Image (cartoon, rainbow, N blue to C red; front, side):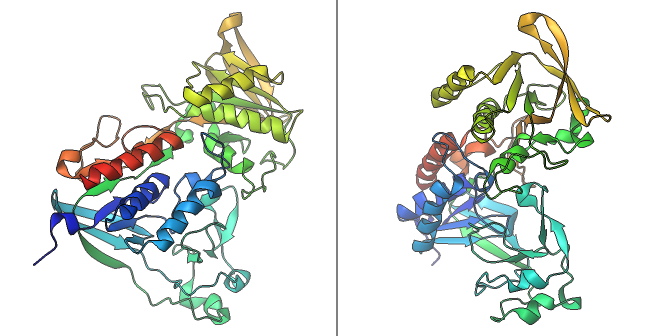
Length: 411
């Protein structure tokens, strides 16, 4: 006899903070859980942050606790570097086909680093949003879970190079490994597939690609992080000098029928947080925030009050129409409205941060979505959407929603 509905595992798709939260809550409630993540590590977007709401904790604060809960709980089975290829069946009896890319580095890797020192090939580091480079064999980050090196299949020369294999004392690298497919029999599916930033290069008027000193909000977050490309030092990417001023452009592509017609809910609070962090790191650096409306709520209103008290932070109500590079002095020219003063202005600055909105990660599956691409919650069908897979949320709200999703999946 096969397993009854209540004994079948619950599948969680996405290993960011929402997926990890749902998985550990389910497992500690006594349920078997399978957690899959397309990256080589768990942690999603939050693991890349300098700090997150509501307490401005570093990622190590909340995620390390949950990683320990996963390690200690035999009810959780996880697959990294894995994607869902198909779902069939019905509530209580789903068949899910997943594909796991070739895992050339085995679990007995000790992260000694000998392989990295001899690797001759470099690649852009997507963990740092391509603001730095790694070798073709690399540790995704110092808190990686699972804690082992991974290999970029696109750049690694494998057997034609083989230098990493030759120096590995523990025989932890095997290029003969092939990708695998598994079929999972599960009761229900929680989609915690998360979000990605809107492509800023689509915003022609803001000329994102014209200067290294025009960054998105997530790239700027990495610059502020101690484990980021500049080890937490706020420097202009173009010449590694200290900026005298940073301008934030709110609603970059959001609330715009030509791009994202909705509010992404978190961008205003993130920019206020960034502004206060700049003041801590560089007390003499000036900050200007151009906004349509500042949408903050709950505890995040405290950030707005603190920002208003800072003499070197200026809040300007007005939409930015254009950002251009002045090639003569390498400054950035911001053209914007100043509604309260009834003028249009041109202002030169050192760095510009585009507060781009968030989009859901769409899966190539036959699952209902709304007109914006977010998943429609199908709890009655055994398919539960959680946090940013169904609408924009901050981390605190996402964790609460993931906990609620775990309860719904059990029910």
